[in-house]
Image 1 (tube, rainbow, N blue to C red):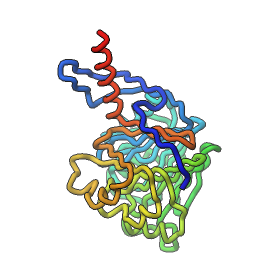
Image 2 (image 1 turned 30 degrees about the vertical axis):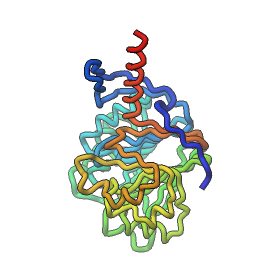
Image 3 (image 1 turned 180 degrees about the horizontal axis):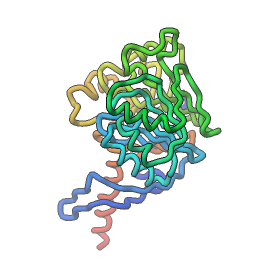
Image 4 (image 1 turned 180 degrees about the vertical axis):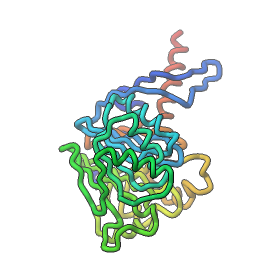
Amino acid sequence: MSSYLWQKTKTVGKIILASSMLYFGTGCTSTTLLKTYEKESPLVVHFLNVGNADSHLIETPNNKLILIDGGKERHGKRISKYIATLGYEKIDYVIASHPHYDHVGGLDVIMKKIEVDNVIDNGLKFKTKAYKEYIKYAKQQNLISISKDTTINVDPELEIRLMVAYDNNEGLNELTNDNSILVRLDYKDASFLFTGDLETEGERDLLNDDENLDVDVLKIGHHGNRTSTSQEFLDAISPKIVIIPTNKAKRTSSPHKVVLDRLINIETYRTDIDGDIIISTDGINYNITTKNSLIDKTNSMLIELKHKL
């Protein structure tokens, strides 16, 4: 793995706090910050805080937008507003990793509000209401269902590879989670891997394919559940940064202590603790900011202002 400069920052590019409720008497800051963001680094990845669900946005070097999963139904409106705040009127690719509610539940809401050029899923049909709503709107777009590794060409500067652990003669796995589409991003020397809800059996299938899985940033599978992120898989990935999308209310299942123990020597961010997480890179250096770092920044600005008054 190449050597990179990791830089924790209070801001990524120029972040403007457009709306924040500041309680000067108590020193408390609202947990809801509406922000606008001026993209300065070529590649920016947003890991959105949607509780025990997944939703991730990728801004490519040439200002294309990719959405991986859309959280639950109640998250669709918030994700749509977030995208609008970033200044995008269109999503170039929506990738549904697999048809579970916490991954596709909000996609129909998003597709109603924002133009979408392409939708990619694994072709697995589901009987749930969330899936039926998702597929109804996905079929109105250019819907592509993949059953083998695929490369999408949305930006000539960015290599985007969709990997499927079920890419074999047996077809889809019995476990829905192990049919998750994995997304790998490579931009110059920078690399990211999103694993959906892939569990240990799917991880083994992927390792048996003799894939080069060595990446810098890993979005781990299944919200940190003990059925994912085996030590063998982590050793193959050897990430420098791990992202866990999870919810404090799910302490008994995810992230599980056994998984957190495996991550003890890896820099780890969690949406339940850090809020929205933004990683930007020029292909060599990385900047990381979190929603909570913005709150810290706001508090420090207030303290500085008080000293000047």
